[in-house]
Image (cartoon, rainbow, N blue to C red; front, side, top):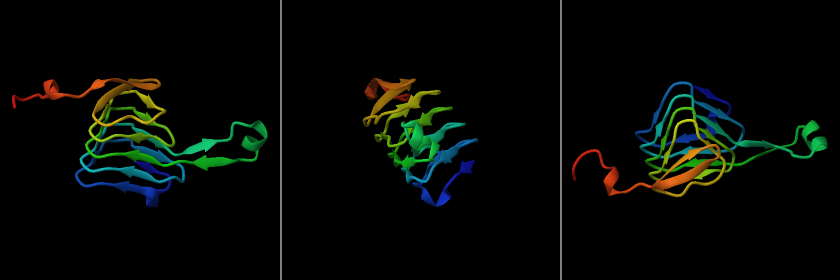
Length: 127
């Protein structure tokens, strides 16, 4: 586990973080309760300047990352600055999340897109 600014990482109860977890940048990162974080997940808060002169001058902006309760991040997921992942959503392995993800959906890909809603038919055990 590597925490660039550990004091800015907030993790809720009963959250599981797998091996090789990485957070970078000075922005706040909030991981809710009952979250599953797959191996090699990356949460980034900094954005560098687009303008070449500003980039050479090391201009940087940080934006918070929010992972709400009951989210599952698959292995090797990257979450970009300013993204919120809604409660109960699942992010497929290897996805790069560049925009907010609503609650209760499966999103996957690069960039991650909503694949479908999670519903009663997704239960593993009979109700």
